[in-house]
Length: 87
Image 1: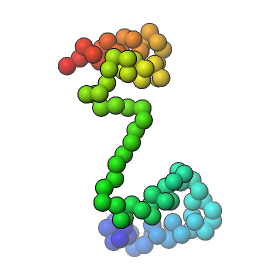
Image 2: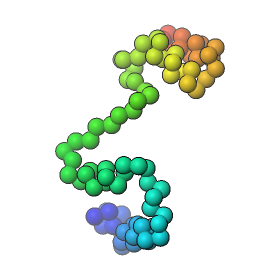
Image 3: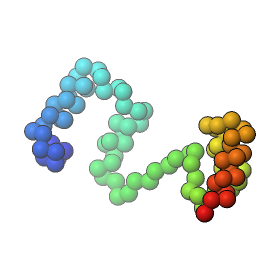
């Protein structure tokens, strides 16, 4: 299917086979092979991201906690205020 879509004559399939045969395929994230097997039969796929929340669900404490994960506390407090004040 992918070979037909991209018009590359089966190169992807051959490369994947080569990677699998030479042991280079384990670079896949844990659980991905199982996902790949189940995905074609899925009616829907739900994504989960444990760190980020939709803006509607963010509270000042949540925003500050997220900002502190990647910034200094004083910068995080300033960024939290900016986010809450922006339209």
